[in-house]
Image 1 (cartoon, rainbow, N blue to C red):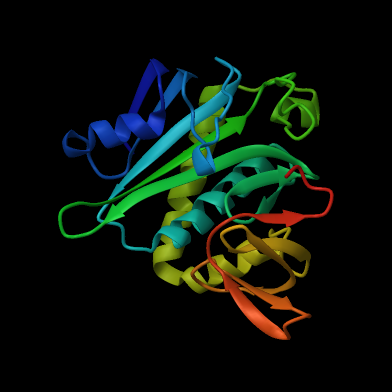
Image 2 (cartoon, one colour; image 1 turned 180 degrees about the vertical axis):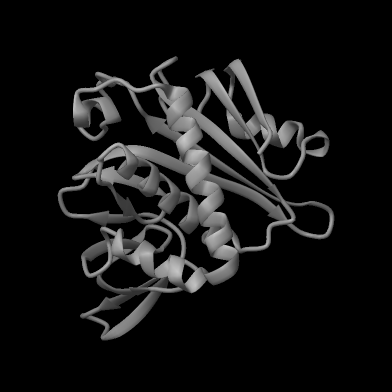
Length: 241
């Protein structure tokens, strides 16, 4: 995979979108300093220079659906962290967590139509961070805080890309098996959650299953029916949100 690195970018995702026509499939970009990192729902991703990994991958003409790429990148972070003896879980839809604290956020942006067909997988991983700004200090963690060890960002990046390439091959060969592994690392499966039902309306339900497309099957006892949750936010008791 071709790699582009910059000292400073506003956002690695934005760089790929702005240069999409001149870049090749399966290239990725990293930045030492990301000044306007983005999370889901227009949230800010705080990135301290040289402390975390800010990375985005470009996929042209995706062979999988967006939610399926979400599954494989989440598992790639799980696999990479295991190499450092760090055990993490996946909080639906796109957070990697340890206990009730977030170590990695993932943002997927894409366009699936006749004019342009691409997907950008953006991710921010807390690596050597020793502390965080007050706004997120109680709900964020890092590789350093988990092990009291510092890490080479280049090595972490290399290991992540290796795991991504392995999982990409697996997903194209046997996605169902990859999905089964994803379920094993889900911290929402078999849990009671609060989920977005309609704008301004939330419901409580029990997560019975995760479909191959990544959507949740949530049983609401009051209504006696299963709801299909494929977007929005979910809240688990004692979690950061």
